[in-house]
Image (cartoon, rainbow, N blue to C red):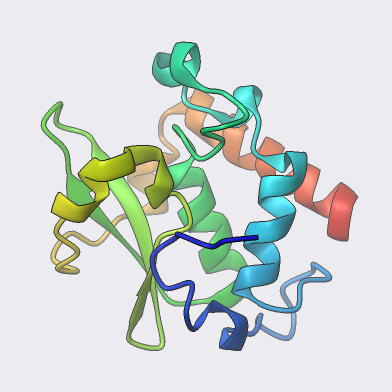
Length: 147
């Protein structure tokens, strides 16, 4: 598999927290598992579901994925303010940036500015019930695959 996500070059070296609760070997392993049927239209944000496809599995998955990555590997979640006023979320683990869902942007990904200036909070994001339910679904699907 050709990896294109931000940080893929060192993702094999990112190991899970000892008590993460999942049988995951590395951040790259998590990407593989998510790509293999866990990211799906039901985990995509509702406003983007019409554009979701097997070819663009990462579409609308950023925030729930970033917080899942934080659950498993620690680190922080940051966001990039998008033109519509929402945030695209990504992770910083051990000082390195990782974005498992950057491929959803295609060529536009090159123009994203990852400056770690907008920390993201679970409390704010998960105040939206539908987002919290999608996060719980993502966790459940991963637990079924690798719990």
